[in-house]
Image 1 (spheres, helix red, strand yellow):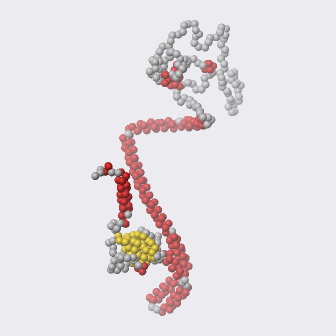
Image 2: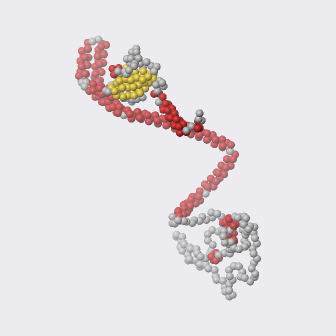
Image 3: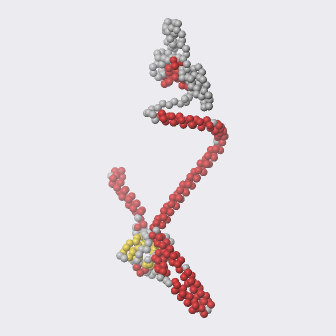
Length: 438
């Protein structure tokens, strides 16, 4: 005997698929199998279906006992097949009729059991009754009333009342009542005709829209199901909100001593912001102009540069800049010619802070690459500090700018450039410029 693992997996899989498909089919159609059926099948012939649908209820003595299985044409007749509980006995002379269940026109199959034997064949056409439609009934009533001469009916009833005028009092009262009834009918003849005509129209419209009304009710049922599901979701959300509120309440209770100082600090910060809201408003307004200028500069080419003044204090980056220039052989204390003559513009420099000077070697040959002090290589031989080489022998030119020739005087300092421009304010008389002004 082969082990299960030695068998062909394709054959085993095919058998498994067939078994699963058979089980699913049996579970979906088990009610149609003879040994699983809970009822017994019957049939009946009708002159017309009368709006009866498959799946409609079958009632026996006013109690639901089964459902309609199928409706099919059998020549000029309609064969209705239905199922009734097997514990209910139908006589051999049983009758069937199609009746209206509701005002919307839903139909049911009513079975009246008669006879001592057991029903074995279809119920014949003689023992079945087709439904009487409400529009047809109102139409017949309207046709009967439309052919009636109400004036002659009123005169006939009046003559009848005169004829029985000498009769006893009770009969006279009855005949007088009939006369008044006929007079009322005669007076309300037009209104009654209009009422019946409108009722006929309403029933006709309802009959034509019965499918739409049924779909509307089905859609309303689906809507109610969705609303019920949403109500459960809302209940869950409300429960979660309640749980979150309890957690927040517990968190506040546990951290009351910690939260109070934090909230006090927050109130102080908000008070500071509120006191300086005008400055904040002006800063936002100026940032709007800056953002507009930045956007214009970005739109002029594939790249752009921008500068934000005092974003990083100068005392933090100046030591590193000095170290970089020192390693490249430049003395940061020697000013450029433009710095010697040009005036300083802009706001004054930020005062220095006690910031540690970066470690860097100052001796040796000039560095022509990025200083290691900025890159940060602690293993470089320039650490620790090395003494600079000895000074050259005397006789060379001193450091700094070249000295003046004998008999030459230093030129006078040039006026500051650019010089300030004075523009009179509106309504102010212009004053003559002073020396050095324009």
